[in-house]
Length: 147
Image (cartoon, rainbow, N blue to C red; front, top):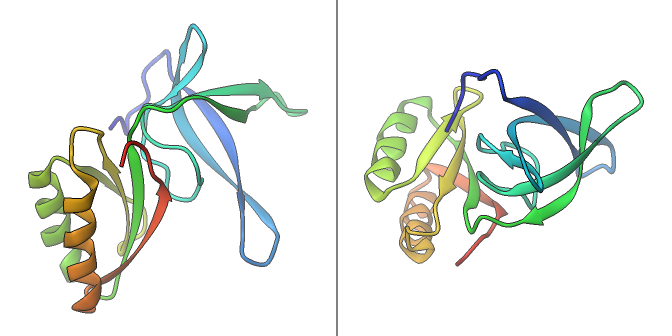
């Protein structure tokens, strides 16, 4: 996952609908490709999009690129983790990394996880279910790719 922008990177805005019906924005790094923009970091809040997906985007009134839809799904999945205790974050992230999943930290207890199509999602889900049952975390599936 790329946390440092490169010269070819652009920011794409995604609408994020809240439970109360209001809409916030999340910006994701992307790289222009022939048929759109390839997402180059893990979404924290945007739903239905994952790392390496190709999206279409058009400039809004302010000139910012705004996602206008998915072009090609990459097969990656995104899950978000909310930890009860900050001290558990590193252990779980390390375990997920050993399983083949990268992650990014937003708030001290909020983690977005990328699950590539080469990693069996059922194995990851089993681990997350165990952690949730133990009271370590809660998780949400933001985008399920090839599962």
